[in-house]
Amino acid sequence: MARPRLAVLGCGSIGKRHLRNLLALGEKDILAFDPREDRRAEAAALARTITTSGDLRAVWDARPEAVLVTAPSKLHVPIALEAAEAGAHLFLEKPVSDVHDDALDALVAKVAEKKLVTLVGCNLRFHPGLVRAKTLLAEKRVGRVVTVRAEFGQYLPDWHPWEDYRQGYSARKDLGGGVILDAIHELDYVRWLAGEVTQVAAFVGHLSHIEIDTEDTASILLRFASGAFGEVHLDYVQRTYTRSCQIVGDEGTVAWEFGKGGEVRLFEARTKAWEVFPGPAGWEPNAMYLDEMRHFLACIKGTERPEQDVAEATRVLDVALAAKASAARGTFVGPGAARD
Image 1 (cartoon, rainbow, N blue to C red):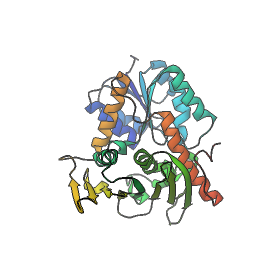
Image 2: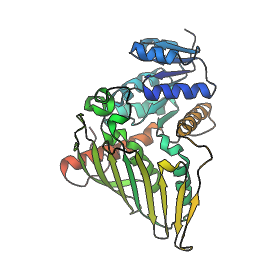
Image 3: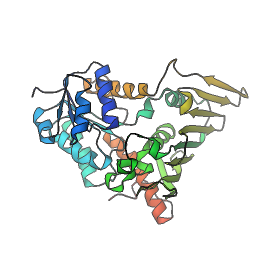
Image 4: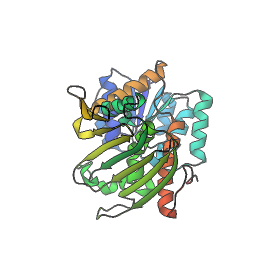
């Protein structure tokens, strides 16, 4: 097998999306791994330049320059450690892991030792609306941030209607599922917008009829190092897709809704009026993933620095795990409280 530039490890929904986007960005010589024959066939059908394998050892023997880890969350770190040992740059789907243990710390140390590029895929950092919101905050258009409220909800059985949701990783604790880790995007971007988190409190539970062994609902409170408060609601229950954020400052408010594309609204006390910043014309959600992958390729080339490397993603994971620990203990906890 000729040395592939890139290997995609896991050819489920997100793996195939990344394969399509890599092809759209002009990449060739891609190796796709999956233990399931049907998924390998689907990957191979995308382009003649995609080689497939059901043997992970064959991937390392092929010595890819970079690896995309798109397997279930529970497998991210074990696979990434093997890739790092093989000297491959790393793109990991979120979350970086489902636990913060010695193996995760070993991965952070290994990629630093080998000077490998790493990027953990939180595609909402590439959403034009949230990018605009971050710019408005940097410009102090709303003054000092007081609260950040974020919400995500969608009925889990609707996510992949072509397959049994009960078998997917989202529904299974043993694969690292559950709405807190699955929707870690919200915890990531509120921290990206408002800064480091110092305290976490949460109510977490399985409250609906959905047949899963993980939590389907979480209400999370955050205190940021700045003194600001955060409120994050996550659920697998809402029958209409909901994703939004409101940032309240002492001089105004920024509001964003995913369903309105890249549009952001800004209210400023000095004008006593709303200003609307429209999103890019013709924007559609896959543009986030394209921009994310374009960014990863630029990081490999050395022309950009990773938006979120494994060390940064570990700090986000600590916030998510702290929410679970808070719910279990019935008290406020700090990030890192759930360290194994």
